[in-house]
Image 1 (cartoon, helix red, strand yellow):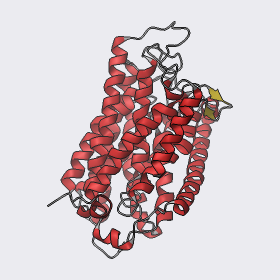
Image 2 (spheres, one colour; image 1 turned 120 degrees about the vertical axis):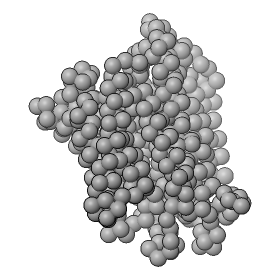
Image 3 (cartoon, rainbow, N blue to C red; image 1 turned 180 degrees about the horizontal axis):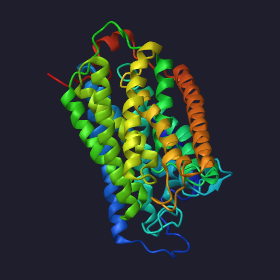
Image 4 (cartoon, rainbow, N blue to C red; image 1 turned 90 degrees about the vertical axis):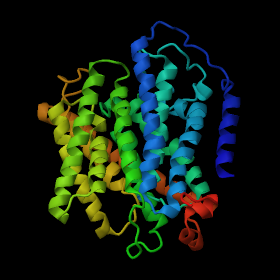
Length: 437
């Protein structure tokens, strides 16, 4: 009943605000939407949707054991659905609503009141405000879905839903507002083109906390826990790569040169990340693996995300190489620390997000995007300092708030399934279904 109570409370807020069913246009419709830009942002929204379902769902679903395949896929599908409604009712207003002290958005746009078809000058002056809203909805949905890889195969479905709802409100919304909604980090000059901090650092650090609080899976380190269906994971990899063009190039909010540059940077980093991971693993372990190259591609994509619209192709190549090397060894070192991040969210998204924000502080150039900044390598050490501060603040905030949420939920509902349920698999124990007959 936890998620239902949260949604009910949101509905009460909408009712109290008196605007939940009003879709009024802006008071001063002085900007005009461009059809080409609008078409690109809507197409990009659909691409980011495909990253979550089926992309991430299949990527994660193939990595777990077959007794947990359906439960893992359902994590992504259910989060996409519940966060979509939460975003429309409350999340968008908290994230992008009129700024309140640099910390959070107001309740002015609860239920999308005032979010209509006229462009908003700060959120895409050539696209309808609702187009920007639905594009950002897809980011809000995929971010908590990324975290599910850390606690896969052992969390209660109800706890997962309740955690995702609350996390979106108390972690994602504030951080996104700080950087994208005109909050205090944005005012300091922090740059995150498509979510290195907002998406990847928040999810990666929160994933580490989840893995530590929930503890290891039964049999971790002794039982055979290899992926049950790597072709499924590769299909998910391809869909993630495909959708990431909308994730990054769509963040230009128009069909323009910045979008083209972000598109090229995205592909360059993904290809380089996959190849570097493969070569490093080949030298380290003696053989290249399919899973390794797929992981390297995702690492390259995650790491280039914050700088995609601010760096040139050669810088993107360097970022991809950094991602393939750093994220590979982050996962190798995971075994030495002993935490059970089931699907390597920390090593790929956490480490990749941190590296990407810092790399943006190094490689960003106004010659690529005049609306950005010059990085350290282009003579601006102050900007690199702001990026480093962004890493520390976002990581620290995500860590503390996630820990508090998990502890509260553990008391209220419990987080883990029983040992017998974990042994039989979550497909049967939580959903009374089997992925394979």
